[in-house]
Length: 92
Picture: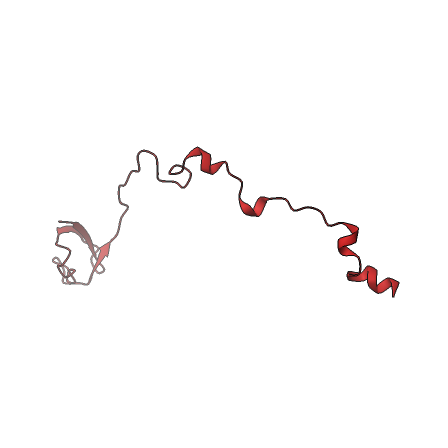
């Protein structure tokens, strides 16, 4: 069962309680009768091994393949642009 830490808003008394997930949170301080709040702290979690990052889970052959958006396009020739844009307007 998880352990929860509570702190009183009135007297600053802190304590830990082992409660089930389905238990209602405590609301009254056992020392002064004031309002309680849950104290949230850091959790200890450690990732070991590979596979936690996008590049760790993939094989090396798929990561070296170029993306579709980085392919180069052939340059436009003068015959492709004739009759369009400001050059056609200037000659008219």
